[in-house]
Image (tube, rainbow, N blue to C red; front, side, top):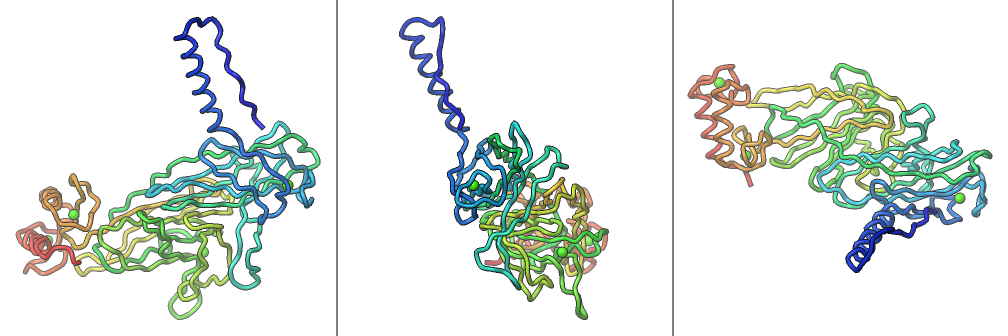
Length: 395
Ligand SMILES: [Ca+2]
Ligand SMILES: [Ca+2]
Ligand SMILES: [Ca+2]
Ligand SMILES: [Ca+2]
């Protein structure tokens, strides 16, 4: 365990200097306390006996292990930790736990439970293994989002040579999702990796950005006429002004929710240990995770491709989007280009700017003014905009 060093201030004299030294020592002590590692407490040889470690970025757990088979606290026993991550509402966070030791050779594993055939309730199995071939070597990684704390199970094992203590240190970084502005209004939206220009075996996850709730997920989509594909598809009805987060990962990526057999050909798989967490097991560094966003715009079907790529081993790609309540809901406060489910002067200002710039999003009408798009920007489009604006957002 790391020792807290007393602070000696040499050459300072007088009350002011003493106060300064005292304040300095407090500050250093506080900094050291924040970074204080959580030491293992044996026995911790099974997931059920995992040591709880409340972690923030820069924090670490420490211990000693020279094997993976011992039980009841033997030195060659695995060490299990339950890493607890604080809530991060509206933020996607990547958490990387890197193993280090003066004598390397440890292996970290993130554990999951299973659902479906052969699953034993509560039994934790090894899912994501550290690799010596990643940069840096020997790290685990997972993602969190949402309003509640998230837990992951970490197991550290060693070899006969790993007689020195190890540290597993957390580095958390905020992920900035790709912001989508699909030319689609409220209604039914399909997100799919089918026909998106690749054959990656994907998994898709859809979250409500403000609550962190997992709304839908799919591993292998069922296809018309029977059978399935390793590509993924989620279909959902959007609520205007709601921020959504879509995560596209390669197989095998775990949330804490079992697949829905009505929409997923996968009937058994892995479960992360708490809501608001995603874990991807593959060390594959690159993969095309692009998807299509499909819906309608003024009565016409639209499909837009979003380029997404795997950001390294254990990586998942994220995109966010918000849809308007009708075609007049284009803007949020300050004329930001994210619709907000409300119709205000911001929408009028942005619409006029787009109309003058001949932006396709301002093309609301065909001659008539019939709903549709004709590539022309005429009084018909203005009439439809005013009509939609006056109609207001439902509810
Ligand atoms: Ca142990
Ligand atoms: Ca799949
Ligand atoms: Ca608006
Ligand atoms: Ca038009």
